[in-house]
Image (tube, rainbow, N blue to C red):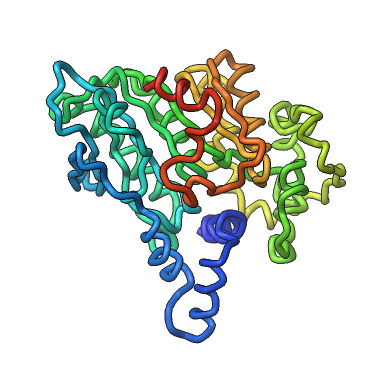
Amino acid sequence: MCSFIFMMQMWGRFSLDFSFAQQGKCLELLGICRQVAVIRFLMNFWNPRVDPSLSAKDLLFDGVPVRVYQPKTPSAGPRKGFMFFHGGAGMIGSIGKRLRLSAREHLSRVVVSVGYRLSPEHLPPAQYKDCLAATIHLIQNAASHGVDPSKIIVGGDSAGGNYASVVAQKLVERSDLPKLRAQVQIYGKFQFIDFNLPSYQQNSSMDTSLLGQLLKGSHVPDSMRLKYGKWLSPDNIPERFKARGYKQVPLAPYEPEVYRQLRELLEPDISCLFAEDSVIQKLPETLIVSCEYDVLRDDTLLYKKCLEDNGVKVSWFHAENGFHGMINFFKGFIFYTFVGWRSALLMLF
């Protein structure tokens, strides 16, 4: 339990370091309301309007709130489906945030935005379990929503990308369900072992004193570090991504008590990179987007290599001037301006 609270606090500090967080902190210090409540309230103003050619229905998928977007124009056959899990460190975001497609592109697609439970009111693994339950519901009830169950994609940004990976991993063992068509990862977080990768050093400007042993790596047993070293080594990061600066940091001695408190962070349900190769090899085709100015950039690069080395087909697009959370600050998805991103998504979708 302690490790889950710590994870959300840490992820939130990496992901929510902007003016909304500062405003919320001031109000919290004044005793008016909690910081997370302020951030949620302000972020809701960023939700896009629904295209008039689309219908938006709020439903429950196995008890999980969802918003289903689909064209008002009747379809000649089943449409493709996209389960979208919003980002926000597991603490903010809502079903109002969705993957925005034009009306023309929406003609053959149904988009489901999942309103999973948020922390700190609901601690992990509540978030990914809601995403999994909603996805299974759509697969099992695809016909009633006009969706082809063999053409369902899961995806999300930031924390939502993490949940999409967990959902994909859980579903590979479900022989009773149709396989996912693909997964889409937009600057997700995939491991909680190494916080000294180049992208963390290059893009972290916050005070990290409170992260202590986690950043030093003293929560990781030597045996575990050896086991996952093939995926976590900085040698797996292409040299061009080290050009802005990188210094190898000596590992801190292993502290069993720290591991005891934080060990849940190292489970595959949280650190997707550490799933067994036998699971990774069964994952569907994957589209990955990374941003240069993002502490999670290298998590994405390492996950990409892990998938490729296990024979999973990967399409990758890197935003040279991108930053974490950037899709929240522009009308529509700014990634549509990147060469290849739009066409790659629509080929999958």
